[in-house]
Structures are given as structure tokens and as C-alpha cells.
Amino acid sequence: MENSNGGVQSVARIFALIEVLCAHPKGASLQTISAESGLPKSTAHRLLSSLVSLGYAVQDSFSTHYRLTMKMFELSSGIVNDMDIMSVAKPHLDKLSRHTGEAVHLVIQDGVDIVYIYKAEAGAGLGGMRMSSHVGLRIPMYCTGVGKAILATQSYGEAERVWRKSSIRALTAHTITDFDAFIEQLKRVRMAGYAIDDEENELGIRCVALAVPGMNGRAEAAFSISGLAAQMTDDRIEHLARMGLAARQDILRDLGWK
Image (cartoon, rainbow, N blue to C red; front, side):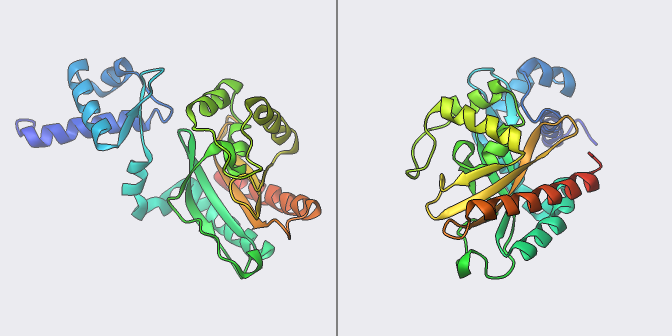
């Protein structure tokens, strides 16, 4: 590499920052980024400002830490199948969709939202109705089963931070808009091992959702099984939850995490 080439040097510096941010998915301070990238603080700050202005990074208004956004994921959508969680979970989720006849989604957390990264919709499912969900769709965590499943594996402080930074509103008559009630829901999720979206995000749709935790027990990914509310009786929910728990064990086994 010719460091005398200003253009190449700038690109190298940008990627040095991106690599540091990739190593700190929850965010890193300017001091940390400068130290780990080997760049002066002034240079790191200037390049980070460029990444923020282009939408590839954000700066947390409270901690002032920087982190990458899902725009980086959108750039890499062509190779998303190489992601461990994707490549490992996909066959299990396809099987789960076939066996349940319902739509199954895989999501990851991005800030206060979840983003769909895979969808399996074997057979008619949903009484012949196709869901409007699609890969790349972004939805707030607070009103989704997958969001609650993920947050139930995280600390109270993290859950509170997501709640405070979200634009809380009732998407349906069933949406939880009270923080104390939301925390009670997370407690139930921890006890049961799965979450339920009881028409909280979309009327007529109920979901069973399960987090996919990392080796430390903390999750940033989850999957859901969705069906028409009229068909998703409490007994059916329990049956699907058992199938989901078995699928999760298979996924964790293949990931080498359990």
C-alpha cells in the first residue's frame, strides 16, 4: 500500500475505524477508537463525523459513544448468508416453518429496533394469507415478541434505555405503553423462556418469540413463529413454544454455544 497516496490512505483510515467499531458493536468512545485504530483523536473524530453524516455510524447522545448502523448490514446484504447466526439458523427455521405451517422470522437488534434478516414461509400458513414482513424491515423492540425476547436476556438498565429512547405509542389496542407493565412482561419472558406478541404490533397476528443468546447468555438475535390470532389459541401457543424451544436448542448446539 502506498501511504503517500492520499486517497488510499484515507480509505485505509476509514476501514481502520470500521474494524474498531465492528469489535465494539455496543459502541466505543472516541478515545478507545483513537487508541485501537492508531489514529490521532482529531483524525478519528473527523472521519467518524463523515461516517455519521453518511448514515453508517451514529453517536449516542448520552454516552457519546459511536457505533455502526444497519446501513452497513444493508451494504453487505449480498453476503448475509455467511453470518454464523444466519447460516446456522436457516435450516432449523425452514424446518420449523414446514412443521408448523407458519411464518418464521429471524431478527437482530439494532439500537432500539429489530431488523428482519431472514423469513421462512413454508406452505400457506396464516390461513393462506402472506405476511407483509420482509428482510430489512425495521420495527421497534418494545412492541414485538422478538424485541421482548431479546431484552429479557439483557439488564434492567438496557431495557430501560431502549424504552426511554423509543417513541412509545399504541400501534394497536394491545400495545404495551406503560414501562412498569413492560418490565413485568420481561420478567414473565425470563420465567417462560419465550415471549408472546399478543397482537401488540399488528392486529390479527400473534407470535411466539425466542431469543438466541450468545455464550454469555445475552442475546441480540431472536426468531418468531407467527400465526393468525384466531388460530393461535393459548394451547397452540404453548405447542409452538415447545417446538421453538427445541429448535433453539438445535441452533445453539450447531453454533457451539451449548
